[in-house]
Length: 560
Image (cartoon, rainbow, N blue to C red; front, side, top):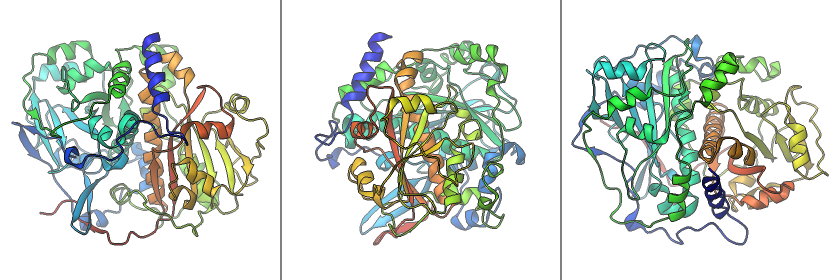
């Protein structure tokens, strides 16, 4: 464990950007070896899923976006081909094609660093009406919006797999292909791929909520056991898929307390015949040994942490479903006419390219967005099985009735004194007058910091022009020492989950967001006076009013 911790801390330090030098990366990406954005398994049966046109999506008013935060109040959807199609269409499918001149590229519902999409998705399920005759493992192919049937197995094995889970549960597995990101971003790619896993977890959770389903992260699963379940065990080479996580999807009115599937089920699956070979993504590769070491050091063994925690506190899996608008002052509550449909929000999510630096965000909207990020009050965070570790350092540029400056939003109760002791003693720690009483939200420095916010985000102008820039500061040293090196990807995934939430909040409020993985790590820490590794900056996110892209046209996601 000590050696693995040393390896991952060494990776973390080596993959930092600084004013003097960026982390190791290709000076100019070799376009001749750019990885294919779409992995396919040749030799498998292709099961086409149902698609919806833009006109059909526009016509769907219900469920409303806000209803995703209380999925147990929605009508439970039947487990059939239409609803499985809808789940993947609203979480991992192509959302649109963009074209500028002769260049055309796809966008997806789930965001990704550089639109490179290292995340692959699998369905593990019992029989599904009109889709799967037998219990099966399928790889999801977003280009045709279809499932590739990789394995079928007996009802007895499915009984073992689903034992201990709510009736009607099925599973979604996620993997990462680091080469897809390291091709462009080099050593830092391991971070970005885990941001994307977080984006994918949240994308799945929102899509499931619209169907009256919930998701639960099976966080006690070991990496090798997950690889066995997904049929990717024993692979090697730069294009191999690394197992990331497994999520149970089940009716929102039920409770899932399991942290993993049974070892008996995994053993039984070893006898299953797997179909299909993964397609080649690039003709040649560049090796990034630091990423290989980080991936090896963070592979997880099976644990019983969640089971033991439930024995000590049986209620730990219950998350308060206090409605979001019950907490914020009444002036911020939207009328039913102002609340957009869920499908429209999640399928029209885009990353802002440039921001309008004359636009201001409403004060009430700002606080409502912050409230949505609080763990324990938002069922979206049910997937954070080991708890939340991230706080938001905010460069507030243009929010009405808030002074421009540097703020801190502490997402966990009773964290103020610890954080205050870790940073510079001369910060103000003033709570704004219009701030909700139960918010741990403080002004640290009153100053116009637009340009400094951009400088810290690798000079990206959108961080200066946005209404605010959020730096995600994660507890770092303590969770690593408590859980081990395998918690390192989890910290980045939490940031990705937060990022996807902020993306959708922006869309729902007529704004636009953008995740920023390129930032100067230690200069952010130095700004706060942070020393050592108690807290680390892991992700940036900007939100504001977007400028129209000139010369770029949007085309439908799927044309018949």
